Length: 171
Length: 74
Image (cartoon, rainbow over all chains, first blue to last red):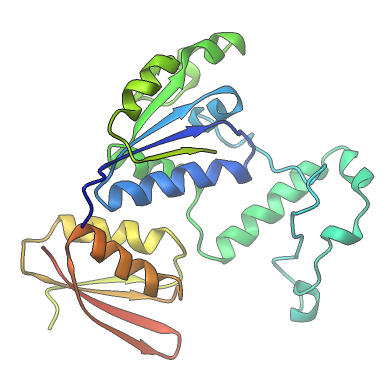
């Protein structure tokens, strides 16, 4: 057993795909007896919104993203359309909706937890959520836009949380 | 014979670990939990989880893509 009992994460990304890593690492951390704090700043604030249904994944400028169909015949599911579709296609309206729909479907098929479910588990396990006050103001959010149980504070508070922490991750 | 059984079949990382943690937290020390999983990644993960939390992994049994982990609550 280890004595390194604290972990902090800075969550900076607000797309649907990047919403997962902070919650996965945080919930696993508390399951493994760590005290975990996530500091959400800039686009990471999206992850704390009451309504996460508007989060999207964008294949635009994202050449690393594999694109396989979660349905249809087996041979078709094996094809990676990622490198085959010209990037300009993703500038068309609603293509982000399509990509997000397909990713959600693939996740469900693979038994990956839903975003809201993972977030709720983090809260149930007492992961501390801190929203960066400066970016809340900057983006014109109101505190009511966010789920309950969120603290609002700044970078100095983040450093206070880092005190004695051996895992400090930037995502 | 296990005191409790958790069926985490079909669930992917990190759900088997989270559900294991939840199940163990409701149990008394010394009680035995069987976790059933179909996630191959959970073989290493359950071992690491027990290593970090002090719970004892008594056995891991694989049977045709299905894993049964027997854990003693610390």
